[in-house]
Image (cartoon, rainbow, N blue to C red):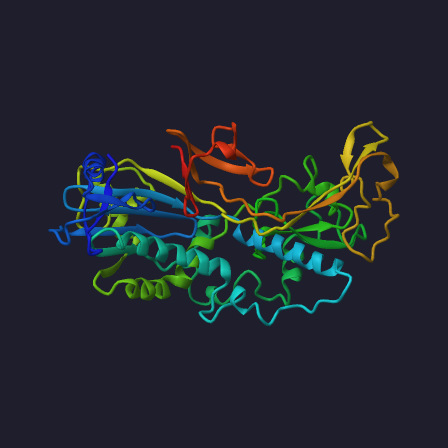
Length: 457
């Protein structure tokens, strides 16, 4: 059964209760609803104090997933997994792209406001916005739970990782020792471009043509670009000739569409190595009355084996510290969702009839297929000549209003509860989690999700 957090009349966190007792207290007027997130919380109207037990806040930190377990000696009150945004950087890049395009379309000149955007770039703490946001999510969750629960101890799993060792294990190579740390993948090469071409023997991975024998011009292709991996690590880069590196080959059924890097990235390990001590200092500053400790993955692994439970982020958090109650609550999973769409304008491409097969295709699919401006539009890659009748014009749609109900929010129509997936027609209609549509005017009550939406297990 889900726990209900309790706050005294003086604002002091007390021991959680069950929903049945909380409902009776509200009905008798001895308590009022205080908040809905992160736990349903009531505030007592008469009692100002009460006895409390030791409660542990255990967190399995991570770059993409956060595991939480808040427990006492006999009960577990919170058993959660939080999934952070996977492509936050790409959305900011989209917003930046459309903003620059709007500025160029203005009839008058507008100076670039770079000087007053310092907070959106590398901040004083030295972290990029995406790294800083993921760090702050851990701190925000910790602060929100300690405000409503009488936490006395907090434990966070923070490890330091050697990415060179992890990479060698992934490749099946001997572990680096001594000078191997100085002699990396790019050792002996002046540029990254030279290192990639030399590794691939100056040969295109698509057509197999060599730059010297077949007189091909080579370029670098990001293998994981389609799945959101824009890193410049060697495992994510490949040698492709200019005749294969075309927009058409990036589309479905193209030569480059399904290519992926064989070696995974180590963003999570790098993230934790970067921010762990800074995050620890900020967690200690949230509440000085709570003892904050650090544990490591090896200790968590041993505890999980002794308790004989499966590997998961929430179970790792449960295995930390000294309390392992037999009364566990059900696992809940939440995904971070965007409350605001930063892209104010969207471009919809024109549609043409392809005279070769008579099918409708976007103008981008029937383009000149050049990748650089110095290339001619009328080269052998040009497919504009196959454009037939124009079916629809291209257009730009500007978003001028902001929807009140956002993805992840809970809405009520009478006594029926629904979870919102997205809003349509400028907020006039809601698309629900089950795929059905709901008119906004029928909604009787809204509970905002606070940026997190529930995932059905």
